[in-house]
Length: 172
Image (cartoon, rainbow, N blue to C red; front, side, top):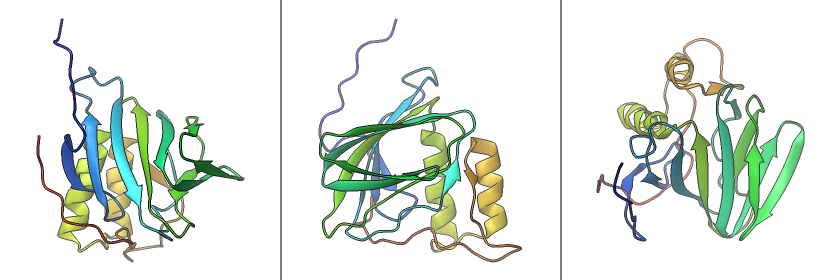
């Protein structure tokens, strides 16, 4: 049996998230035997977020900590305020973003764990200055059950980093 974990505010594995803002993996898949991961993220005011995508074998649950998160799920647009929750079932196209004039901070839980996907996405964005080729995104998505539904054709790049954030470092 493992020892209980406590992750204090400001702690976790920190790196630049898919859209450029700092991301904190609070609980990773190694701590849960791959069952789930808990990640804290934010979108700046007006940030478009990631491209629409589908997880065929993962659920995602969102909880807004501060601000207002807009979440497209299928053909619905949800607006989540501070304290609100939403669950995106497996197989539903979705995209979290921020149309408000203030930053939104939120937690999301992926089940099974997807923290490895976000770490690899950070590496891909760093290697391509936030403009990975569509084929590289497709390959990454295929390995991690994240099918981007609106990528450009051919070798064209996709602007993933669409908001600024202070550089994050790995704090274990």
